Amino acid sequence: MEKFRVVTGVQKIHKNRPRQSFVYGCVSYLFAFPIFRFLFRGKTIGISNLPNIGGVVVVSNHGSHLDPPILGHALGRPVAFMAKSELFKVPILSFIISSCGAYPVKRGSGDREAIRNASNRLSEGWATGVFLDGTRQENGRVNDPKAGAALLAARTGSPILPVAIINSHRAFPKGSLFPRLVSIHLRVGVLIQPPKTKKREDLISTTKEIQISINSMLDEGLI
Image (cartoon, rainbow, N blue to C red; front, side):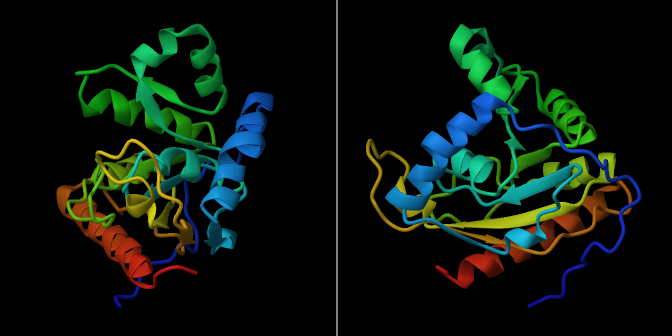
């Protein structure tokens, strides 16, 4: 396995952490976490690699619709994700997802707005979630990684936390109407430094590093 560049000091990490809202706590402890922990016999290893404060880009594989709530509520601190702007027009839902750190992205607005909104969340000290492929993968692995996570890290100076979500693609495959009750485990890797520059070659190199880290943890299997 290749050796990964572990963060020993990042110059621009934002040393703050948004307060966990009451709504987030309710969603997390009464809904998301119990489903992960008991229904899918969830386990997490390497949680100590997640910084307690400051912006961090949480990057994972993407196998099913279960991934955002699991990643957003199983790491011990809120993880913000982008959501379609239309969802913020629904009164109660808008309140809930906003309280859980979601930020709006207009359909068809392109990647620039998404990057800008995610960068703002990182600057506020949020852990911000990114799926490296961008879309769900039937085999649950990182197959076609995009450079968005590396760009976010380069723009904000935030470290990158690779996370492997094991078995979610089997628990809720594409096209399925109901989930299967198989175990879902999370492996949290060591922090990776942000790219030195925003040049294409640096972004590609860091993206490849993240891909190797996540797929290597997936190869280790269930905890």
